[in-house]
Length: 437
Ligand code: SF4
Image 1 (cartoon, rainbow, N blue to C red):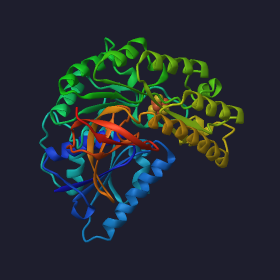
Image 2 (cartoon, helix red, strand yellow):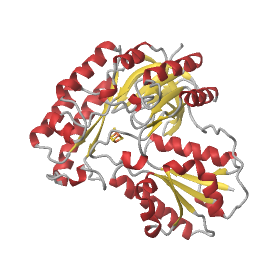
Image 3 (spheres, rainbow, N blue to C red):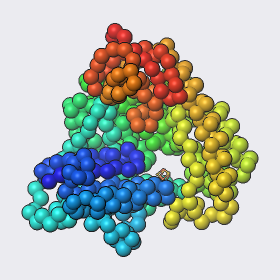
Image 4 (cartoon, rainbow, N blue to C red):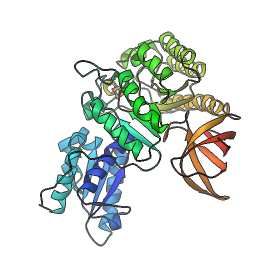
């Protein structure tokens, strides 16, 4: 039996797909690379924004269409955020789908697959199923859900309340990934900074980083933390990021906005002064600090002056990387019902202006590394007009989010960490050549 997996959305979904893939592999299923070879198709969906929901549904319908044009039926199972968000409404709307699996039901994927395929043998699962990972970096999901309830965000309704994964489980998973060849652990979750706050007694992300550092150090592996929140940056955490050898001086802190009034309306906190003080402190206390952030244009009620304020803030902070989104009124969120929604054309104009600033700052930050000799993890090989080229990333490039290093000269294999001299850049990409260690 073969299962086809299609994963949409963020890295957290990729981790969930990896787990379902491992559960099915443990039950004897092999992976199909095309629907023509599949006995069942599993679509892991995203519903963070309305556009992501539409893309997930379109992808499912295209798949159903492809199956209908084929020679045999392949049941489709829809997993993840769309079923978690829309639940019972979906069965009538999407008769093409054989089963819907919420994110918190995904550990039962084997039973669901067996049910839709009419296999009634009791599944025999090993007690602990490790993730399957290709390449040299792995996402380590340290928590699920979110308690913050930002007024624009549906995630707490889709993924539920914050729940940290136990320390021992994370250390076991990290050890297994590293023993399997992984050279970088990327810590993800909706709100990584409060990991352990739901334990009794409470633990902190700094505790987790210290424990992971012990595990990663013998492998020479890197640890990177994504999705921190400004309020989560404690003295203890800053010291851990600065002092632990495996932890990279790379921090991802979404700000969304800087206006005090709008942050309050978003059910977030902060002001331009507080945010600036935080970023200033991070840059002065952590040598080489690289900062990634996220900003949102066109939140309801955003005035021209507040849009200017955010643009000036991004210019002043000069983030190394900054993703920009236009506000999207998501079903069931408070912000969707707020008055003074910003017209779409104004939102797009403000979004483009922020993207231009983010790119200007980000491209120049990338170019500032030309001439450096850095460690690069080799991720794969790309075919180019001039032949095959090695692709990797260095410490200031988060996999799947930032640019990569194109290696024009030298030989290595996937998973190697090599010394590379950076000789050129274009946009967020760098060009380098391998030098002797
Ligand atoms: S912190 Fe805010 S934006 Fe991020 S997942 Fe939680 S509610 Fe959503």
